[in-house]
Image 1 (cartoon, helix red, strand yellow):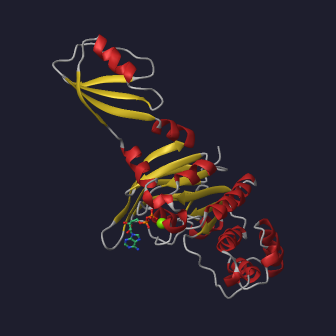
Image 2: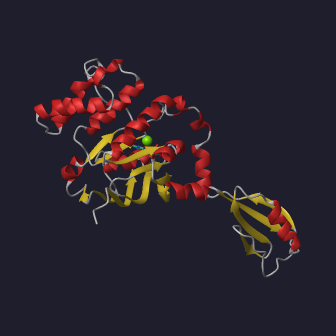
Image 3: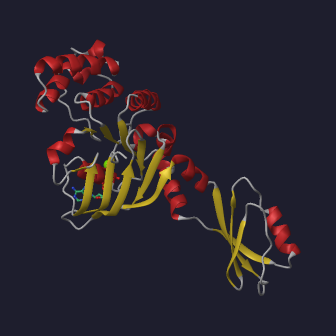
Length: 317
Ligand SMILES: Nc1ncnc2c1ncn2[C@@H]1O[C@H](COP(=O)(O)OP(=O)(O)O)[C@@H](O)[C@H]1O
Ligand SMILES: [Mg+2]
């Protein structure tokens, strides 16, 4: 068994101002995976990425990259990892070619090799035609792709991207998704953070959902979507409930006390059948309310106004 590409155990981060950005976060990402860390603004995504890439000191817990502990063997761990930060941070007055070559030099790559690698990566990012222009003149999408090409210079086994598409329009996003799929298909483990459900859905096999510094769900994308497909209700009943509730295929009916029923059912089913069965059993429903779980609440926040306009959504972040 090979070590996980990333293994985070009971990670905590409390900033100096007392904000608990991470509250005992544990997660594991398999080699070769395409993994999303999905959560709303302020959830702790950048803090987690910051700790993994050694830019932020953890308050407690451990992080291993392919089995290498970042606290014990920092530089060995960092060599395995490529980072694309949330903000564009290259020098706008350098050319893409120089940005890549200088970056590789910083990581100790011989210059002759760096020149070859820069050409390869600029071609992979479809930026070879722009290799010698001032980076300032690149379009927003090209700048983002340049950030990826730079991180790929050292051939990291794990590529981590913090909101790579926040604030860019849908065309650019699709272009970046294609680039990232290619990187992953070539064998690199990819982890990205996002506050776009759509992005996680189109790219990732597995994901963790983080909210207020805590992982609230973790697993295959498919599993999470099927969980969201279930609707919950609370029914208040007139009088006392009978000992046994009606049985309905694919629907969960449970008494939570003498006059309340918890109902869970797929969104595709309608309520009439449930009410008919309750009525036949002599159970009269006085009132009903929907019951949303934390996951649903989170998705409402993720897909709310903030997410409708991708051009402005990330602008202030
Ligand atoms: N350097 C910092 N000092 C104090 N608090 C911070 C700092 N960075 C982030 N925070 C706080 O930590 C929480 C998580 O932030 P962040 O990790 O940036 O979330 P996300 O990337 O999911 O939007 C937020 O409440 C944020 O205000
Ligand atoms: Mg962030």
